[in-house]
Image 1: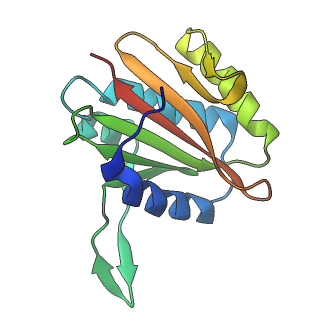
Image 2 (image 1 turned 60 degrees about the horizontal axis):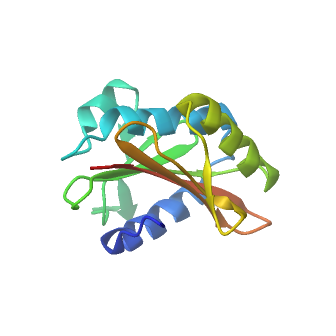
Length: 160
């Protein structure tokens, strides 16, 4: 049931590293990111204009003072990073954030339950990863980082 996107591994790694440099995000901030992704993802694209209108700005990178390309487009707002992929078979938008502690992941999952008005699904009796299936979408919450530096990755995809 896991959402696997081989072409995104490099982008996920880059965005996770970038998210780790930001302060920990608060639960409402993460949920707003998920809702932004839900508005932007449809059956054939991630509408970046919707994300920009919602306050998300492009992330740029440099090395030794020179601009370098990113392996996948990244956007940021507050303490959240979003990556998006429209060219995949299923367009996705992923929210990446550092969280203050491991228990914050449960708080985020509970807040997503409320925001999506959808029942959470789990696999093999484990609380995380968690899945939601709001109309025409799939949302997957997974943890990233470590116990000492926890984070979340929440992938929003279109469900055919």
